[in-house]
Image 1 (cartoon, rainbow, N blue to C red):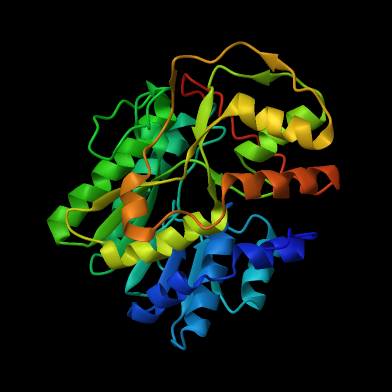
Image 2: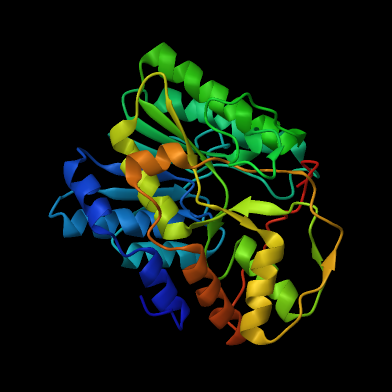
Amino acid sequence: MPPPQTELELDDLLSTPTEAVVEAMRDLDGDVLVLGVSGKMGPSLARLARRASEAAGTRRRIIGAGRFSRPDTRQLLDRAGVETIACDLLADSGFDALPRVENVLYLVGQKFGTAAEPTRMWATNAYLSGAAMQRFPEARWVVLSTGNVYAMSPAGGSGATEADSLGPVGDYAVSALARERIVEFFSRHSHTSAAVLRLNYAIELRYGVLRDIADRVYRREPLDLSMGWVNLIWQRDANARILAALAHAASPPLVLNLTGDKVSIRELAHRFGGIWGIEPRFTGAESDTALLSDPSRSYRLFGPPEVSVEQMIEWVAGWVAAGGRSLELPTHFEERHGRF
């Protein structure tokens, strides 16, 4: 695949369906509602669902609901054939405008800034999941969670599996676990089919762990090594798995790690530095544990991600060197104490 040169090309790449996604949408019954569509992953997910449905020759509504604090996001989706609904689910009438659908992709959540406003974060991450499931008890659900629900894993291992005990650190991670527990309760109580996907970390060229590392290397800023390893997955591969997971929704919910291979922060920095002829600068040293997830179970279901870490590195390096836009939203991947 040629590297995207413009944001238009990048958005097109992120929403181009693979044959596996087309097959998944061909086999799926009913309309699809993306709750929280106006976040970082939602627009490309909704467009991917729209394009895959069209390629499959399947007539269905793809509906995106969100607050749309940026009007251009809604315009992008409208032009792509995604029906949009502006709503605040925390408002008294937040759910009133939402139609009944057969499939719900739940991307609602709040991570950054939560240390300063924990009550809104708890309402968003925990309460709303139950309210939404009560609104659509007969739908199939895919609920996005986070790998932050796990405790730190030995850095030399392959990461936490879905069967491992959990150990969330900080309000954000604990509220994300509360969301999972509430989803499981309503799934069991109402026999609602659901899948819970624990994501870390989705990558695109304007945002993500690779962009954070690349920016620091390019600017010759020191890079904190205290979280010495991370998992990475290209955003389209993550979204493709979200759509494919609808076919595996169950009661009680299926739980999957939504991620890719483990990589070293130090090695990533040296890879960028080698491309640009810059010697990376570091601060601190690698701890013997890191927030890591084992992707084996999702690989068995969906195969490995199509875009490799090496491909992502090359794309991000070219984008940064060309002055490509950043969303200016640091991931804080190095945070070990749960303060976001």
